Length: 452
Ligand code: SAH
Ligand code: SF4
Ligand code: F3S
Image (cartoon, rainbow, N blue to C red; front, top):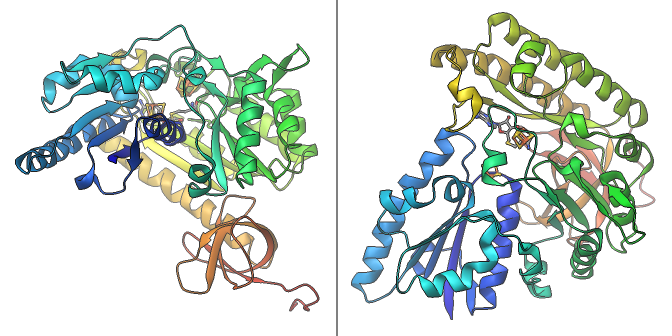
């Protein structure tokens, strides 16, 4: 049997896509391997979001090429495929920079992989068209055993692409225009996953809350409506969605946070900056105060919600005052978790053309200050759960023998001792300690007295 090794960079969409590629290649007789050296086919599933991420691909390709040569010396053939957003953005340039690459394939063309591999016997090949047909109609469903091997928490793509055109971002160019998948397809996929034991679905999309597509009743469904329907799928206990844009939080979705128990009290809602001037220059189309008001509305319905965000520091023209506005917004809101980055100019995006770029040293200093504050908030949030009893969805054996590990509703990893529970169960666990990345808890046997 031929073996394929897939390495993904970047966002959850790439993780999901890697699984779809493995599924389509399974129909061609490929099994997955975690060891690159034994792979007949190596796929790098790349990310173009920041310069560092994109450049990493070329250094990694250098290593893959060496391995290809070593295997060749022992008479084994290796195909190298570059997929993902760098493939889409750079296309032929990748073939030029790395002669060992056989196929370059963009995110909308993974269903063509078998044909591309066949063609690559004769010539090196690039496929970065935006096809008219929907790739999801051509990607096979994974086998039940495959779903089971991937765990009880699964990603499900409901939307792809982005029409927002934030001035710093490559995604609208690499993933194309916003397309929502039909409700019936999403339900089919959800039921198949649930049938194989999946308990938690994370609905993903570059702009997931812009979801809109006709439902079985003929009307157009929003994300809020879709979530309500998915909550009825037998077996599905938890729902999450990511990544959202503040402009697309409509009433139905906000209300779901108050009235839909399966929707976990965690929301990743990137704000990027707290300065109105910078938000405008980023083309985010909302102000810092509008974000504050939105969060206040959501918290009114779901006071326990844990918030998470992305931030960019050093966007062109960002002054000390703009940065202080970001620090103030962070202090005002309080985030349980965050991702923060130095602005990285990306070819072809409007912000890269702005003359007033912020010096690297200033970016580094601002990032350090922001990360310090965000880390303090994260620790405070985690410590705040000590003493609480949280429902934990069990995902895998823990780090030490006898331990079992899962996630809290707030997406925190939790470990506790148990020999009685199975993966996929949801167990009430009393949190006794917060480590730097995980929480530690104890299981309260029904009938046991909880120490005060
Ligand atoms: N669709 C998501 C974000 C996708 S990219 C959204 O709208 O929030 C993930 C994060 O990468 C972004 O939220 C942003 O914080 C960061 N990012 C995107 N482009 C960047 C750039 N040019 N430089 C630095 N960070 C960037
Ligand atoms: Fe990029 Fe903005 Fe679209 Fe998010 S909303 S993917 S940051 S353009
Ligand atoms: Fe990266 Fe593409 Fe995702 S650029 S963040 S892999 S959409």
